Length: 90
Image 1 (tube, rainbow, N blue to C red):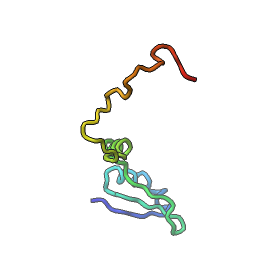
Image 2: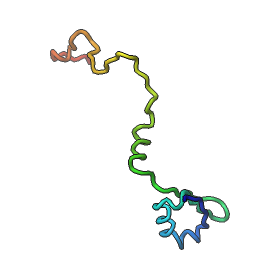
Image 3: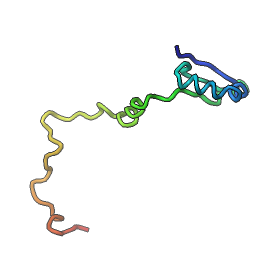
Image 4: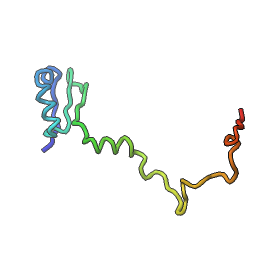
């Protein structure tokens, strides 16, 4: 069961390896580290690799809608490009 916990910076310094192990095993879901009673850092366990990749590469998923019948691989121009004949426009 995941839980949230708070440590002072001094407590965390003494127990950091234990805290990392508990985060890695998802025994803890969030650790707040405080200094003089104020939060200075928040630790969370890493996401599963598949979830991290999905968040990184799939964050815009579903944001573009293509009309039915649109072929994104079809040529856009009817005429040949002049660059095909060695002519460049500068």
